[in-house]
Length: 236
Image (cartoon, rainbow, N blue to C red):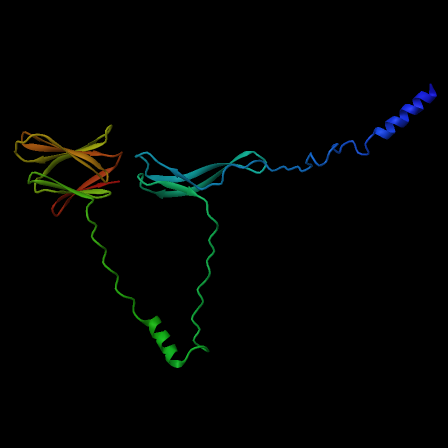
């Protein structure tokens, strides 16, 4: 019995591997390991749209995944007004480094004449500022011979000699109603515009006045003031 046990022990010792944790075929199984998880696609740009009642960006909250896999938040204060028509774009870029412009050194490398020219150039008066260009309207619409609308991005010039009696705003859909004093009779007309904040305008005659209804593309605050040729309607 002792001989049998001795023979079996020798056979096991001959068949056993030196390191049981190494694979049988190291050419087939890789030993590489990593704790790096698969990343989401690289950020290019994200475009955000806002509803028509948005006027100011207070802050932006980013939810991000940290290196340990937990979800955290980063809040960025903004506190800035913006046009809700615009796209808000989130993109990634490398930090921009700026280099200071070297100062002009005339003490050694320039002649006296060059020095005088450089000093004279620096002391020369700045040219007068160019007057701002007059912004042309996006579209102009006239109705008969007594009222005209010049449409801009954030205002509408109402050119008319008729007195405005009243004005008010109605929501859903968003529209501004204005009544002008005039005794006239004409068929109600709707004019498609689709420029700036104005989608269309409807004009109809009533007893002693006519009504203008301006259909807007969103929710606005408005203000109306008299101007040289009539009234200026400002939207914000």
